[in-house]
Length: 123
Image 1: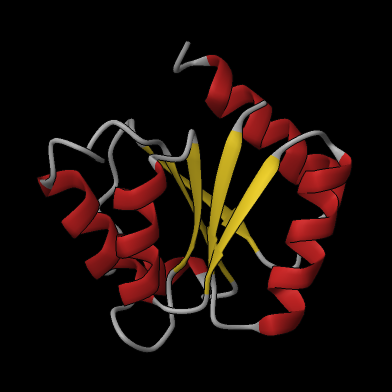
Image 2: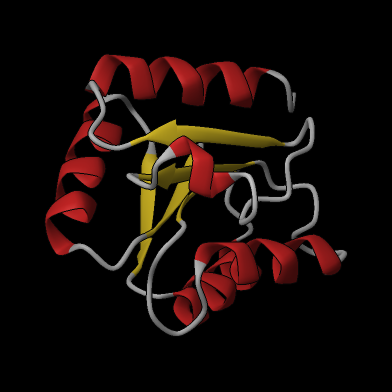
């Protein structure tokens, strides 16, 4: 069973994501801010991280940068979740082949498809 870490400060989003992921057969870990997200990633070494860009105690980009600097977490794939307009993203996200951006609001099936596609690249 693959483990996914959700890092998002919006309780409603976290609850929806948790339900959708668990129904799809994933084990779920939750962090409500960037500091918790970094700690949970280091503790549990999830198979994938869903990471909100805008949140307190370390925004998503700061969390991403910390994860990529650590040998323990640098290879964990990250999918950024955001409602931010595309034009604003360019200056905030370190675009590379390892970065996936998924827009809020989302369709559950589309998110699961992106997660499965991302996980299939890490086998």
